[in-house]
Amino acid sequence: MVSNIQEVRARGARTLVIAEEGDEAVKAYAEYVFYVPETPTLLMPLLTTVPLQIFAAELAAAKGYDVDQPRNLAKSVTVE
Image (cartoon, rainbow, N blue to C red; front, side, top):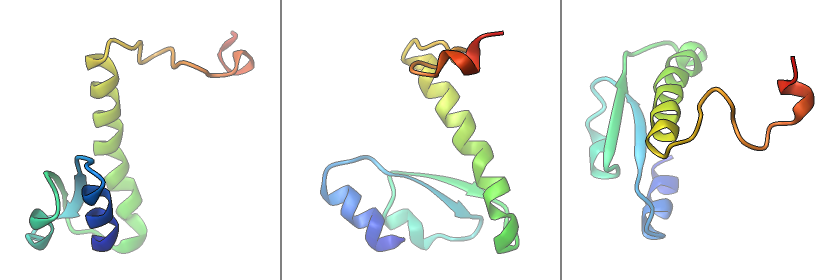
């Protein structure tokens, strides 16, 4: 994962990293770090999804997009 982060940064992207609490080594590779509690590996996706969803919703709202009506979603999904 560290090599992937380094590659992304080398291309000029900003990096947001989700790491377990206590993992200080990741700070050297990320501009922003979201910490989640230490959890068994199989449960980690449940914890990491929450901050990513909040981040995506806040970013969409900041850009002025309607979070409840995403663009390019097929009408068959959105029609009531």
